[in-house]
Amino acid sequence: MPHPYVLLSAAVSLDGYLDDTGPERLVLSGPADFDRVDEVRASVDAILIGAGTLRTDNPRLLVNSPGRRAARVAAGRPEYPLKVTVSTSGDLDPGALFWHTGGEKVVYTTDRGAERACEAGIAADVVPLGPEVDWRRLLEHLHDERGVRRLMVEGGGIVHTQLIQQQLADELQLVLAPLFVGDPGAPRLFGPGAYQGGRLRLVETRAIGDVVLMRYEPTAPGSGRLASPADRHWLRMACELAERCPPSATAFSVGALVVAADGTELARGYSREGGDPVVHAEEAALAKVDGADPRLPGATVYSSLEPCARRASRPRPCARLILDAGVRRVVTAWREPDTFVEAADGAGVLAAGGAETVVLPEYEERAKAPNRHLLG
Image 1 (cartoon, helix red, strand yellow):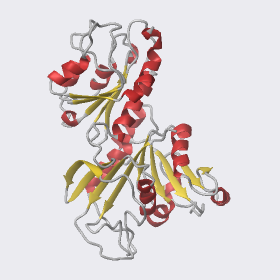
Image 2 (tube, one colour):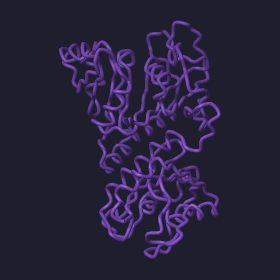
Image 3 (spheres, rainbow, N blue to C red):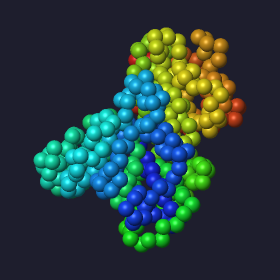
Image 4 (tube, rainbow, N blue to C red):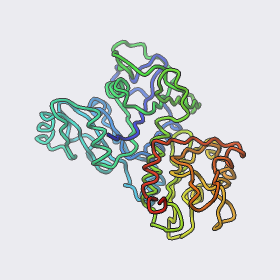
């Protein structure tokens, strides 16, 4: 069953602690990284924390930037991501800031925990998962019932540990702070237990003030795969966008997204968007990105169909638009058939321009679905 793309986010000391044992929360990061976290929050559909983090930190979990909130609304999304917490016992403080700020909230708990949470008057949608908290069922419910496609998990250590051990995390964004805690009683990011899946793959390192951001993706030992869990997530979204295209007898229905190397969505588009009968998906998405954006050279274009190499309706085909934008990586679901253009080879144009094309054929049928009437 499908579930959201799961992004784990945490900051730790050099010796691996999330906090110390003092009465005040240990500040591990700084303003620049707080702003980065705010940007990530603005890009997701939901933010999840464990009940322990809710009790200890009393967080609001908001998108603080008015500009980012406005951009979410302009894109047809809620002003704030859905806020999610998980509690086995249902023992939650109804006065916590979590319940009284931001947008919608949901609690996942056990059957007995649901009774307790409802009796306490928790201002949220309470979802019982049975006698125990089942993470796979929780993620499926978020995907199917709440429309969550991208989930940010901000703690705590028990939640991060369970998701990693059950191989349900797609990405780990870890900030390393230049200090030591040294208290064995302080909370750690990951606890003991069985970890599978081998080494993680380092995707990015970046200095942010005096801390370092490290982004990792789980991968099987020595797999060397070109496509990551993130690629599959974004390509699924491109296929979903293709389903929104106004039908046409003379053009394919295609969805596309432009995504920065750090996982931030820069833009999205789909064929014939905005009533333009000839606009292509990649063209619509790239038109929404500032051509001077420094993230473009490291970005990936996700398109449900191979970008076109030739077209009659515009002077430049989408493969050329991608190259001219500076993007050098494309992930797609299927090669363009000869329905409208003989010997179409957008991947060849991209390769000649120094760009890599990754094809994930497991999404081909999904990408073809809104185009069945054209395929005979």
